Each structure stands twice: as C-alpha cells, then as structure tokens.
Length: 118
Length: 112
Image (tube, rainbow over the protein chains, first blue to last red):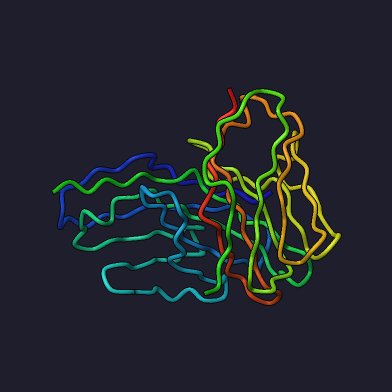
C-alpha cells in the first residue's frame, strides 16, 4: 500500500531562516507522482509542485526548492529566507501512474504546520 | 475561470439530519473525488468518479454516498450524519491524461 509520512508535525522558525520540510513515501509502483500542497490559514489547498518518478532533478522556484531522492524515498521541501506569509500547513502527496488506467487517488501525508515568526 | 466550487462552505447540523454538499467543476474533467481532512491524518479519499454514472469507494466511504449524473457535478450525500463526520471536506477534479488535481475551496462541516 502507498503511504506518505511527514514526521514533523509542527515547525516554528524566525523569519529569514531556512527551513526544510521532510517527506518520506512508500510505494511498490515503479512509476508515480509526488506533490506538495500549501494550505494557508484561509483553508484552501494551493498546488506547489508535481514531480514524476522518472525525474530526479531537483527543482527551484524562487525561495522554494525540492529535493527528490529515490534511493531514500524522500521528497523534501526547503524554503529559503522564510517569510511570515509562508506560514501554513504543507502537505506532501503521492499518486500512482498511469491515471488513464484508473489510478485515482492522492495519498497525503499528515501535514506539517509551519509557523514563521517575525 | 477554471475552478471547482463547493457549497455550502460552512455547515453546522445535527445528528441524523440528511445533508448534501455540492461540487461542480467547469473544466469538463472526467475524474472527480471527495476527500476529508482531519487533524493528524491529512486528507483521505472518500469516493471518486471516473465519469458519468461511474463511481467507486475510496479509503473512508462509510456513511457517505455520491452520485454522478452529470459530468460537471459530484455531490456528496450524508444520509444520517454523525459527529465523527465533523471534518473539512474537499472536492477535486482532474482531466484525463493530466495529473494535477484541482481542489475546491473546502466545506467545513460540524455535526452536533
């Protein structure tokens, strides 16, 4: 069965610090997608990134970066120079491929509540 | 604007009073799902639909029903709500061949 573990329940840092959110996943599939979502206090889910299992290149988007390591089944998310607006709950999620064959589900981790203090 | 809408956004009800949470998408997506979010558990899939009149159970379907009579709509029905169904509910949709799920804004349900 697929499983996503976000061991950090809550993280609190001071603004401008770098912070890394850990995500470890389990799957027997050889092809799959990994996602990160942000849930700000307003409650909606904001899509941040999708990474497929064939692409292990790290990705950077502004202050955000993602480190995908198949060898350790991890997909960690780093925020550089954190800001108060980054305060939110962050979810890591996994889905199997291909969707065209009926794969339908995102398996979510428990979420990490990130608080950035001014 | 491409979007998934849910109604109501907030609902407080009492045990046993049937309710329906509506979900509608304007992207002509085939696939739709319902998730519930609970503290410490993340989001878990309740039901999903692969197309009109095709639905199936997710991980936590007990106490819920769904229907997919039209492509754009996927209502979630609680025939006899109980307090353990107090949760934040999300509807999601996705087109074929596209792996990004679009989520609705969420419905916060409290069952007293």
